[in-house]
Length: 178
Image 1 (cartoon, rainbow, N blue to C red):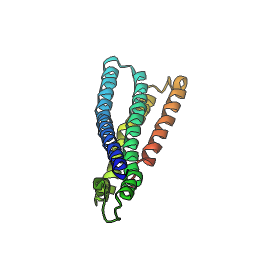
Image 2 (image 1 turned 45 degrees about the horizontal axis):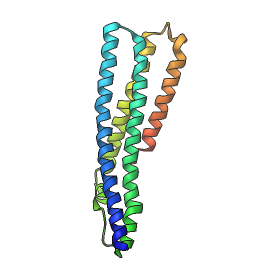
Image 3 (image 1 turned 30 degrees about the vertical axis):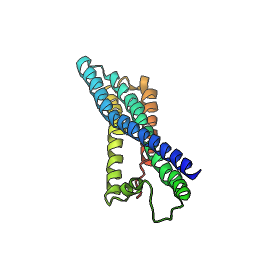
């Protein structure tokens, strides 16, 4: 019976590893999609001198930033599940002592001496790409359309609030600790 349970858990690990690979690919491609979307909106703004189009950038930032964050947190959650649930089950079934580690990569990469620095840098990049660009767009819109701002200030306020929410979510899920 133990052998069958071990096989089931190893199959679960294979499926989780496949999901991690898919989510990382999707997440990383979102950065390129975001930059392309920004370029398209900025090109439209420059060509048409339609400053109201600047209000599209925060929405793009929020939607793509949220999708990026969701995928990133799922990758982290899967890793945590493997370390905290799947590995102990396999150790118990295999009758192994604490000295034998399953899925060593799940622990090894977290012990990199530069991990905290890299996580801080990644957090800052995520903030700049997804929050800073949207906030910069709102500032530029406000400066370029001061006489029309009272009519649309509620849009600016809502987008700023959503960007602030995204900012805090990025910070919360950054997993900067070692």
